[in-house]
Length: 389
Image (cartoon, rainbow, N blue to C red; front, top):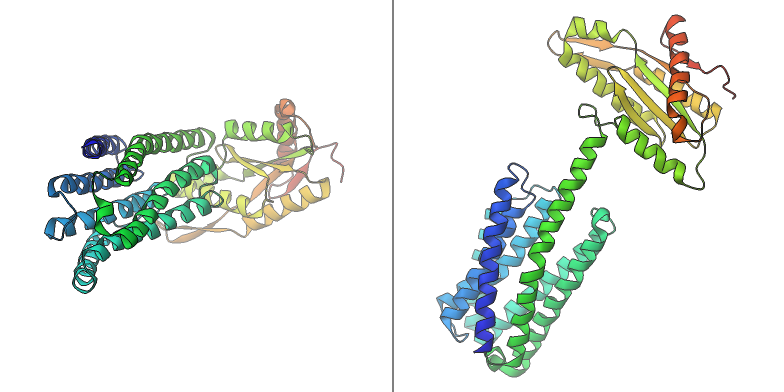
């Protein structure tokens, strides 16, 4: 009786959180981050447990076959939802239908050849393998694609380890003790559904937390980046520069202002859409020619700033010349006129500085050098008066 009450409460949890996930997904509009799929997973598992309550003892029959299909499909659905959360477009309906059809056939074969005990043992073993794969994926993800969520991934791995161990124990008990081990009055079943209720209570808020964390990170990233070129904006640049100089081993930085020559003429002749394309292509070149760890920012209009961190004067001038030459050789296609556009840049380089508080002073210094380069004919690199190589 106690286990039946626990299982009934578990069904209520699953169905309530399914509705909650679905409501959250509708508020997320186009970027649902897998919440709609998590809602489906909760619904499938809730229906499986409702059928278990209605069907009674674990006997052979159509309802039992469907119950096993739903039970196995639920964690697969969660896995597909996790893939969508991490930005990997994944079909949902077709894989689940293939899984359902395949597992139905497998159940029929195992029932016919080995009996009902083997069919229940098969479900426990399949769940063990599935959960074990999830644990490995979470541990790998905590060091690769989900480094920013490392603690959360480890917590999920620990929680899933519990249900994996319980399914492994269920498999061993069925093999050794037969169907009597699946009786709802057994102590093991009570522990199993208590732990499932614990997961059903803890995991949904954790999933909501992950969505809020991802949304917050994206908002922070948007606030620090230029929406057109995806480079840092001034705010993002200053934040990153302050982080750099807070390090005890921080070396001085050099500031480069990169200005596209005659950009107004490009806009006037080819239109702002093509002008935006030129800005994006120049940004790509700056990213490709800067060194790893350097900071690149779109300051505004056609001006970019590159902060060379941990370099000497000669290295900075070589990098600036590399950028200038790469942009001079850049071709941007104007599809409206079916012609290639070429552009050049003038680059002003400041003296080295060692504090974020003097950024504006050295920005002005680089701007003065840039202005000299413009007066001297453009398409050149000009350094500050006190610059030493």
